[in-house]
Amino acid sequence: MYRYFIHPIAGLMFLGSSFGCVLPKQFEVVQSNTVASALNTNEISYSSKSNRPTTKKAIISIEGEKTTITLKLYAEYRNLFTTYFPDKDFLPEGVSSGEGTGVRFITNFGGTKNNNAYVSISFLNSLQNLGQLRRFVNGKSGLIATNKWRVVNRTRNAAYPWAKERISFRQGRDITGNLYLGQQNGKVFYVITHYPLEYGDGFAPRSDVILKNLQIGS
Image (tube, rainbow, N blue to C red; front, side):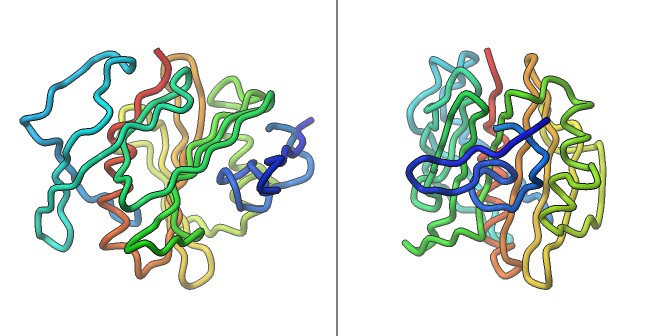
């Protein structure tokens, strides 16, 4: 059996996309196009998460124009993962309990927060292997069905070393995104990118930076 768990302060449901998606009652656990980003070659490379610098630069391409941005290390749950994110463009919100841990990086483009545009990373303690994760995602009352996402593509040729499958979806007429099934260093998890179609040119390269810098476990 699976069940919900609720953020005690915000009152937002964690299960699903980490804060905001509707989830089936029986669960008891706690971009369109990928745009290439490249790390600045002047940055120092570290192999250990504990030694990752607190900030660094990245070069992203938006509408064919290269832009240098500053990234900030996110290490609130470093026992599970670390990553980098453009701190001028995203606001991280995390929650953890005995049932799981999730973080949502919510867009804050131009100082305007939009809860419909985010990257979420979720670790559910009751999901111990990739088979369990696939059933959680694809079941009749699973993550996809309950959130009424329409799957438009599935591929196991995902762009990131931790990603075992990418499921592209649409929600209504205006929302698009990707659901990644992840497994690395003995941990299974899922990642969701979710955003309005009009955000595509700006959202995709910035979210790609977060996912390319994602390091799992030790």
